Length: 400
Image (cartoon, rainbow, N blue to C red; front, side, top):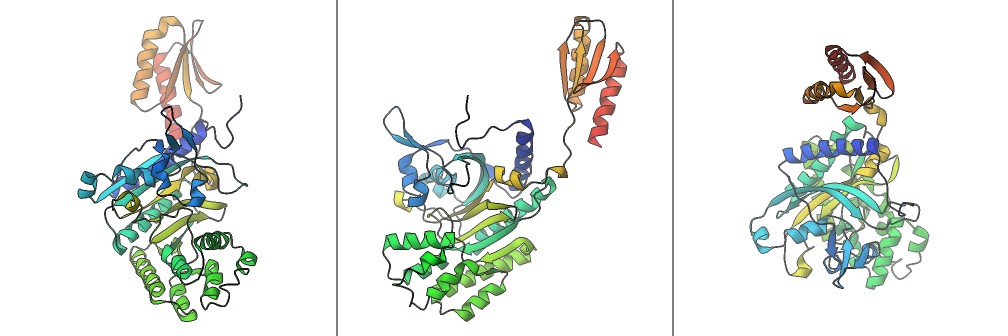
């Protein structure tokens, strides 16, 4: 009985840690006015085909259903939620603020990692665009990581970029669509040896800017330095100014400590149209959080709905979590009793549970009642009041 490659079994301790994260994040999102939605696990592949780039399509789990239609396990939530809100009545009642939690399925982007099944918890702001909305989403992403500090997520940073930077550079080069796709892949991998082989653009005045993009990262001053050091077009300067506005608002929110401008940030999915961002930890080489703006995702289906959002990867967050931040719950308390005490022990257990104390009860042979914590015998006898006191003291000791 083998586990399917790429899938993962989660045992009680791991599930408990995951649920604690979910509780913190759900509480945060709802305080900001977001409501939970639940899209289906399976979508028609044609729905995803209109929104995913070529690279992302290669990572999709797809199969034929019994009606002969090609379907897919969702590789992310954004497309499903946009489909939900693409209906006319939903677009007309925008804006909508929603969040979600659930599994996504996609083949990994690197042969060094096997994680085809991941849990995402994220949100989408639908029906509004502009610097205020973009900054709210980024502020919420930072606030989410900050809220998780109480669970041991401490070393993190959020890189903020814009697809207009890379697209603006690409549009200046005389390259075919396939060459541009190749260039994007090489830049993301920081393969500078291969990049140098693009001799057709090596003499272009923006080629040095392209090569330096992966290193143009810092606080607000990186924007002014970039405008000073490279011959940028007006649209590229406008994009840098937009990032400057976002930074100023984040600073007003006092959230800039963990934020960085990253002009070379490139996302996996091709549907992003504006600001993009990723959350990282130095303890892991993959994003803990990712998001951005995607105003044109529905245009191929004839609809229009501006949107911005992000998702956190809970399993990755658990990889960088310092488990010692919260002590583990001690073993459950159990009461083993002879049948003659069945009625009174059941009533006692219910009373304890009402007080928030987890209790396991089970019948046994013999004359005495036994109280155990895990395998430790803490009481043996027939005094039910004493049993109640012992259990309350044990639980109170752990709670404190």
